Image 1 (cartoon, rainbow, N blue to C red):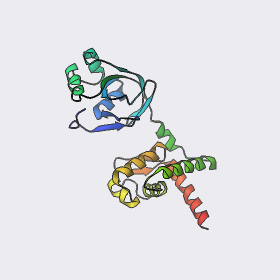
Image 2: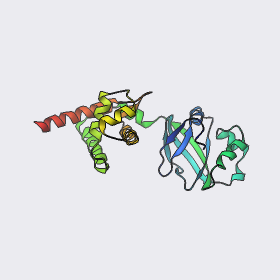
Image 3: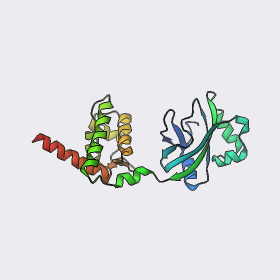
Image 4: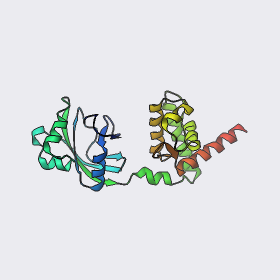
Length: 217
């Protein structure tokens, strides 16, 4: 899709990113757009898989390679285009890769929303989350980042990523990626501007603070 078009929302799917512009997301939420077409070197989604989007968790019914001339006007309308020509013109903007037809299934609530509202109540749950953060820290080339990022989000809710990243000594894009990892664990949530810790994240941070205090004494 053209980068000059209106703002896109990116969905992580392994391999290439599957991109949806805002109007397509709204159509998917309404159940009107039930197809997507992409030109990929290799598919980044698979039959039976799911995608987390800004409007919910999308189920993938099928993914199949198709010829450009097999796409119908009805396909184009189901994919959110005003005409078959509009869709074909967009697909022709790239010459590399093959054309894939993606049948979209039900759009379900984002499971992270329920997760982040659920406070980890037991010591076992909190220890498990602590272990997950330790593994994220161990894999990070920049060193341990999870605790100071949780602290920054707790102390500065609603502050832009560009202002927060300096507080934790991270580049802006790296910071945003790390916050997304916390979000996937149900520990943070995005606001209109900036972020904040979820109830689950606050419970974990309190637990980590208590452990740090105990170790200090």
